[in-house]
Amino acid sequence: MNVNIWAAARAFASALRAGHDGPRTSQHRASGTGTCPDWCTSDHRCTAWRRFPNGEHRSRSVSTRTPYGMMTTTRTASVGGVTHVEMLLSVRLDMRDRIAIRQAQLLTSGVDLATRAVLATSAELREVGR
Ligand SMILES: [Zn+2]
Image (cartoon, rainbow, N blue to C red):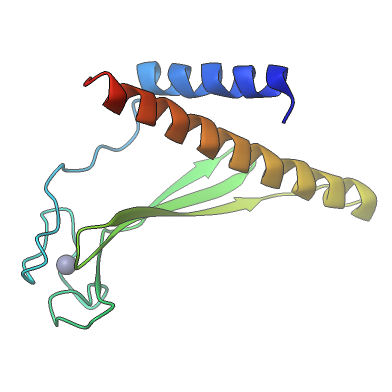
């Protein structure tokens, strides 16, 4: 990976953390007892309370209209307490196929890079106990 791109991505992730004002989620963790965390919808979307082996708690999806399309985010947690975020990104692409393909390739790489940078800086924060 290009060192300059990685450095820029890390700086981007730090800036996101410093200025993030998006939706906050509870720190309550799934207990594995079948009790839903307070962020779970606790309705038909949650399969954990039924104690399905692969059941998961699911938050209400948050959809945000952006200048380029729509972004939808949902938090999940397995009955074992492993949490994930599911993100659906719908981006309007150029009408010209060659440009649309390149945009899709760059978006895929960019989302992957941004995700890696955010997770890397999060790991560093855990190491220093912040
Ligand atoms: Zn639940």
